Image (cartoon, protein in one colour):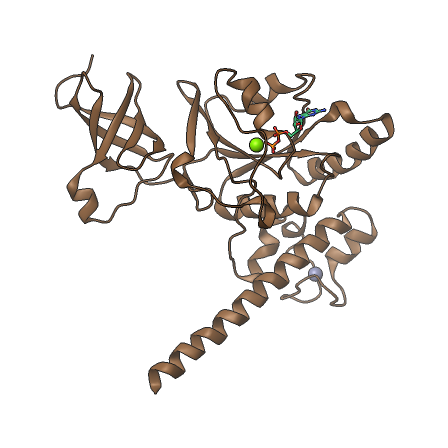
Length: 315
Ligand SMILES: Nc1nc2c(ncn2[C@@H]2O[C@H](COP(=O)(O)OP(=O)(O)O)[C@@H](O)[C@H]2O)c(=O)[nH]1
Ligand SMILES: [Mg+2]
Ligand SMILES: [Zn+2]
């Protein structure tokens, strides 16, 4: 049982309107936040590692006294201290979208979180389609990414998927319809998961942060349930940094004729040569360039609005 007034380490697994649910090795507690934390304007998120003081043993109530420094933070869906994000795909129904995969891989790398690519619904594929999938899968593997195949329908690969989630905190993401809820309901047969998602731009749609939960797989393993979120937000980075989140392009750093080569149309670009030699997938490079120009555009717009503000202030 709990020692009176002692501090316990725990993990925030859910945010409710007036309290947080904190999982401790002994039990789950409903916790409010200590006044000093509120004064410091410390925000607490699902996934935070915290220290709690037990207030009432019978009603399992406590106070969060300290929040440990976050290892990483995903703003949308708001989750702290993820070990990995698992991007679920299907080859068809819905059709595989490699641009979505590459934007996801870029985003998780920029947030400092490991990424895993899962190809679900493999039971639907013909031999020819399986071969096509293998080509794509291999190019991700050769780049250094972890990939897996599953079929929620045939229960194929689900144990392997759970194995890589052991002793970790993982979030499943992926476009609508790829089978996230079906996979989660295999893992947690007693819980209900909505089988269709609200979709807006990239299937984000409307959502409430209060529904985000960490579900315990075992004492040290959690899976995040993030209903309403089909995608990880693409973060804003300086355009020059985009290449550093594409490992095959990052590896070429310093090998182009120009130091500041953005690997678009410059002469003597090593990345272009490697695409010709089939060492770098041309579609990966296209997605890199698209992100590069998006970030450049963002910077241009923001500089313009900064200048606008300065002008206003001068008046
Ligand atoms: N054939 C097949 N269908 C699947 C598989 N996984 C999910 N589905 C089906 O695909 C549809 C969408 O699944 P759902 O879990 O709601 O996808 P979510 O939007 O990613 O949560 C449902 O009709 C599922 O039954 C699979 O591995 N194989
Ligand atoms: Mg779903
Ligand atoms: Zn180059």
